Amino acid sequence: MNSATIFRAVVLAGDRGPGDPVAREAGTSCKALVPVAGRPMIFHVLDTLHRAAAIAPAPLVSGSGECLLGQSPELLRRLAAGTVTWRENESSPSRSALAAFTQLQQEYGNAPVLLTTADHPLLTPAMVDHFCNRAADSGLDIAAGVVPATLVAGAFPESRRTVTRLRDGGICGANLFALLTPRAGQALSYWRRVEAQRKSPLKIVRTVGFFTLLSYLFGRLTLAAGCRRLSAAMGVRGGTVEIPFPEAAVDVDTPAHRQQAEEIIARRHSP
Image (cartoon, rainbow, N blue to C red; front, side, top):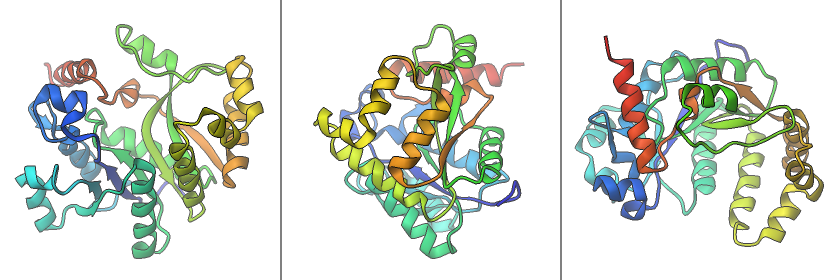
């Protein structure tokens, strides 16, 4: 692969329905349809993917037909026009991701896949292209986008984001994953095992690795060491791609995050 590689895209749009706190506060059937800056979040994401040079046309949306398709005439129009494709979501995010990845691999001959989520309205084509181009040149099977925590804190000091604290600096996730080879499916299967064990901490420790977890808890784990150990556990070459845009770490998980996204978009469009 190289920086001219074109990715198929998957947008995970399944959630907890009206029980999701963001959807409940906004009064929508699902979080993907929560408006930010007057537009449902999923269309911010789809429009960004449409404009990104690294992304092939017609991204695949994985969601609930009842909660999403049945409530969005615009999404139905896009499906009819062929500018997006659809797959009903599975019972969990990991299962939905694996099913979508397998489908696209079969349809497009092992093309690389970008995986993202519908609750990321601040994504821009520059973020997507930066991530995809560097992931394509990485030689990895799977890559996760990360943003240095110091960059996020400097840009948004009032915001609380989840930080993975490592010996060589904290990182924030960006909800961007590059599935670069067929072996990336093994990483999604690993995610499914961890997801299935979320109610059994002991099983999670066994799956992740006792010494990896211990190193992390005592602040000794570096990013490189963590990637090596997880790669060995998953049976793939996994790693990270640093993204120099603090907004890439700002998805919408709470009503406060939604307000923050509104403010950031307003600043982008202010004269």
